[in-house]
Image (cartoon, rainbow, N blue to C red):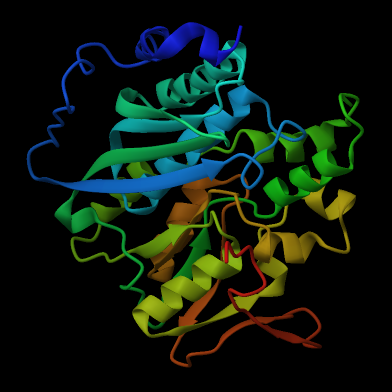
Length: 330
């Protein structure tokens, strides 16, 4: 069955079954942030042929990834989710099964983080597009911004980088329908298809804040690549950074499968959806200890405007980081 066979009313009834109860039916949803909290709003758009394709991503995974991208932005602000709205532009020839699996993927990711769909919009288009707006809440003194990094801060990453890019390369190189991947290959593919927004890190940060009422944490997520995140934080804060090659957060799987390009994937591959944070070193050490599993201190914020990666093992090379080597829409 195609979407055109359902008609608009049938299509809306199908979509509403995936929404939170008592939120659909009026011209807008009413959202109440908890008392003392600020409202955080973020939007992300995924387009068929740009962000996903049938060759690399099932409809379920498109739904999961579209939600994960927005929840990751909330986590990067220190915010917990209140709900999302979904704007869909769909070709009439798209199958109903694809649409159902899209929403099943969204729902699976949303339920994992205790939230759901509270509204949206629908229109016809020649290209499938998924536009999601996520709403979250954060106390004013716990907002994580890009512009507050301090000289001497340690730079922390919450997990491995480059795995999503490695998984994408495996999928693009695979024969259509191939399923016989090794465990290490499948780990990279899963990192690409079902990324995990790091909302789990926020309670740990909150516990650490209890030890310092004046603790300032700067940061963002690494959806556009680790190098991009570090450069944006430094530029917004008017500082520079020195990173260490030996502490780059590269997984054993990526190192073994793509030894020649692992570092480049980690720096510029993107879509890892980890958090990149700056904070005083004692707090950073405690945070890394609590997170584990790929979390690491990878360098320090410095006075110079340069953002460099040094080989602290051999001292042979210095890499100046930039945003141009990563993905650019235009």
